[in-house]
Every structure is written in structure tokens, then in C-alpha cells.
Image 1 (cartoon, protein in one colour):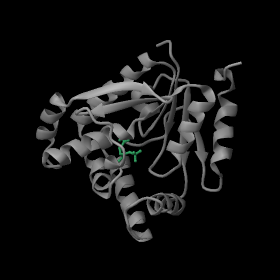
Image 2 (image 1 turned 90 degrees about the vertical axis):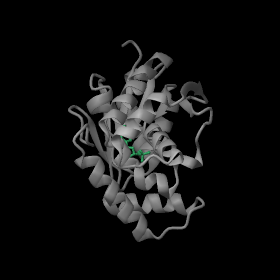
Image 3 (image 1 turned 180 degrees about the vertical axis):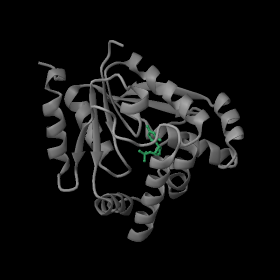
Image 4 (image 1 turned 135 degrees about the vertical axis):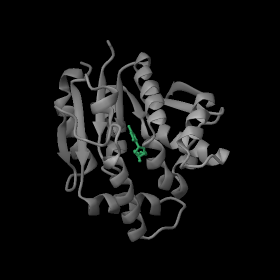
Length: 224
Ligand code: DC
């Protein structure tokens, strides 16, 4: 592998997406949101009316999924069935089901292979749950972002509140806890700190501070 990969892992609402996008821009690397692939598959499963509990049917659907990857605006992006999914994959329904889909071995092996293949597009900053442990365990550049449960619920609530759906703080908090339990407890590639990862507790840090901290450690990768 000649292209470089910066792995940024951590639980939901730990600030990974915003930070990873900014780090990618700072390094002039391509940004990859690996969770959007698990969300895209979940959206497709729900759309096709496949039961979320039926791993065999989900595996069959995966074989025929029409997915296309491309680079635009500094990121590796994708279309499913010819459509680039945006708000459709951020709904309460997708949020509630994505952890179950992401725990299925057939889904994980397919997504991991798509993600590994992306390094052909260039240098990457990839965010997710298992990038440093399973997708690119060989990369030297690994970060694990975390924040207290309360702070993560507060951030996610703010994000949703700015959007279209109406939910209460305690619903957001409960939903985050359910997803954390599944993401950390699943058999295959659970959320873990990768060996050698730099752990950053972002509870009382703002985005600028986290980005500066990471870029400082990635100085050798910065273009002169
Ligand atoms: O980061 P996110 O909230 O968009 O992730 C959506 C779901 O996908 C979440 O339940 C965890 C799962 N996921 C995963 O298992 N592995 C990844 N590399 C990224 C996300």
C-alpha cells in the first residue's frame, strides 16, 4: 500500500465526522465516512422490505446491490441504485436499525472490502469504528476519539435539533446507549481502541483543539 491512511475511530457522536473532514482538508487527503456505507445498506434493506432480522436475505441482497464509488469535493462518495444518499440515511429509522445491520458478518466483510479498495483513489482519512483494528490495521496513523456519554448525547441532540426530526434529549440518550452496546458488544470487529492508537477524550475540547492536536501529530504528512 503506497497511499497513506489516517484512521479515526470512536463511538457515535464523539465528534469524529467533523474532525475527520477537517483533518482530511488540512492534509489534502480524501475523507471517507465508513458509517455511511452501513447506513446506505440499512436504507436499501428497509426500502426493499427485507427483514432486518434476516441475515441470509440481507446477504443475498448485498450480492446484487448496485453501488458506485467516486471522488468529489475532497471525499470518496458513493451512489446506491444510481442515487447519492444524503438525509435518507440520517433518519431515526436508519439510526435505530444500522447497528444490527453492521453486526452481520456478510455486511461487514463486504463493507471492509469496499473500504480497503478505496486506497486506490489516494491518501485517505477514514472515520469509523474498526478502521484501525480491522480495515487498515497496518497504518501507523490511528486515533480514537471519545467523550462522556452525556456530552455525546448533548452533541447528537443539538445536531438532530438543527435538522428536521423532533426527538427529546432522553430519546437521543437512550438511542445512543443502545447503539454503543451493540457496536461494542458485537462478535465481529467490535468498537475497540486499536493497538497504538492515540486516545483523545474530547469531552471538554472544541473541534479546533481536537483538529490541531491531530494535525500536530501528523506533521510528517503535511505538504510542505
Ligand atoms: O458513524 P455512524 O453513526 O454513521 O455509524 C453508523 C453505524 O455503523 C454504527 O452503528 C456503527 C456502524 N459502523 C461500524 O460498525 N463500522 C464502521 N467502520 C463504521 C460504522
